[in-house]
Length: 271
Image (cartoon, rainbow, N blue to C red; front, side):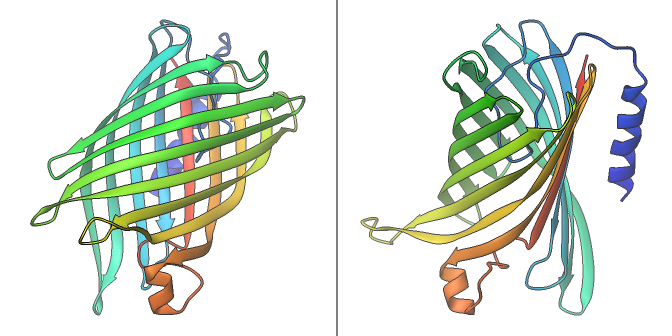
């Protein structure tokens, strides 16, 4: 609640700022990325908080990301950001809380085509993350289209992760996100997002690859864009889980590897 209150105060503060020319890369979704990039020389700061609630036992996690974005050219933008988080979970008969740094990340996005002027908007996205015990590379194909008062988006995602847990192991993750939002006014949007993720594992012999676990999330998303700042927020409960954990537990959702509900708030401030 403390973090949410802080974000709301920031929204109020920047809403009082005098108007400046609007940027072209306001986000209207929280799980999906759109193809637009910052113009050359532009700078934006994006604080982000994700709430993850509900597992097999009591669980509340919060992931925080502080991102600095900058336009390199009119088509290429970069970003650096710090990741940190906290968890409160049941351990036996006790409720235990912890917080930790989740490393630093670098991001690059290259715009290929425009969502309004071209047949479809498109961009390539690359993200690199590093911690002392984990390394991650993530690539995305971003597609979107502005259709009158509607904006639709789709992302294809591949992630490779290396982690040390007494020995080095690696995971392959694939994901798809889809979203559609409607412009109720020039500034306010209302829509929905669907996000599905799965983790692939190889057999000991390395000859077979299977889906170890995965889940599908969906829910509403609300966006607001002013001249100097924008805000996007969503709530996405888990609809169904699949893979070994669900089969073994005999349930419809995977609350061992994923959470029951996710909520995310992203604030963008043009500097």
